[in-house]
Amino acid sequence: MQESGETSGTYNGMSSDNIKGLVLALSSSFFIGASFIVKKKGLKKAGSSGVRAGSGGYSYLYEPLWWTGMLTMVVGEIANFAAYAFAPAILVTPLGAVSIIISATLAHIILRERLHIFGILGCILCVVGSITIVLHAPQERQIQSVAEVWDLATEPGFLAYAVLVLLVVFFLMVNYVPQYGQTHVMVYIGICSLVGSLSVMGVKALGIALKLTFSGMNQLAYPQTWVFAFVVVSCIITQMNYLNKALDTFNTAVVSPIYYVMFTTFTIVASVIMFKDWAGQNGSQIVTEMCGFVTILAGTFLLHKTKDMTGSPSFSFPRTPKHSNMEEFDLEGAPLVNLELTHTS
Image (tube, helix red, strand yellow):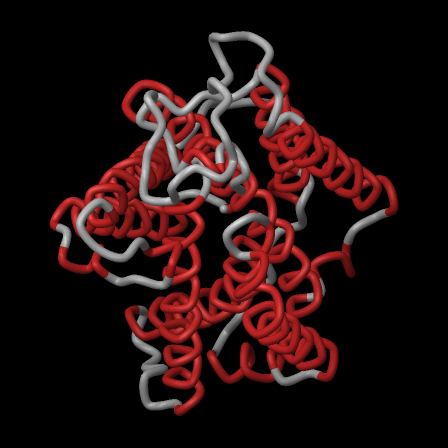
């Protein structure tokens, strides 16, 4: 807190470590944003000769282009993880929003997926709201061992959150995915985001364990480390499965910002519960963060309300019958014609 106070008074330029973190974070955003497009191209190509991911198929696993997208995303995630080793989270985390802009721009250029002008405004509001939350978020607490993280994760508050997430995800998978997965973007993205909030908590725990291990305090001997590793692997597999379904079914330019918004929101909620982030904040800071949430909700509302609008030809799709053949693509090379612009971090 003292450092932040000092830096707010006088700006002395970025340190070399912060510059490295900034470059890594921007590189991460580029790779992750581009990976959405490359994976989408791979999913389209695989869907043209096999069962689409949105229909429960896994033919994309045999498509090299999809694996190229996956490799691109992995490189981006590694760069993002490395950025946290050089720069504070308050610098690195907001830059994740850059991947939304990159993804939407590349989708417009490469996939020729277009948004209504108000959809673009919705994207901007989502990014601004997310940045507002992150910029006013508290500093992460210092953890000295993986056992300390385990104590935090097994407190009643976070256990209740984790159980609630698992129940909601199970309910969505059983009752909503079969009926509404193909027509309602929030189903697939809701599952990805809820599970993702748990995976981030696990990734934080593993990051702490590895950092302490590299500093000479071996944490790999603790069983809690491997429990967190199992949670991370399980959550990531689930996330990727439903993210692929969302990308194959809905418009990329909508999926990216909504996924980012929901993922960021649930991750912040999970972190507040587990790490007691708001305990050291005053009312003004918390209110500012809540204003960020309202801004995000406004952006999400605009994205949904404008998904079927056909205003400016520069940003909207030509209309096609909603009951067209599900295996066909429109003349613009966009997603399936019967699911245009209904898509969702």
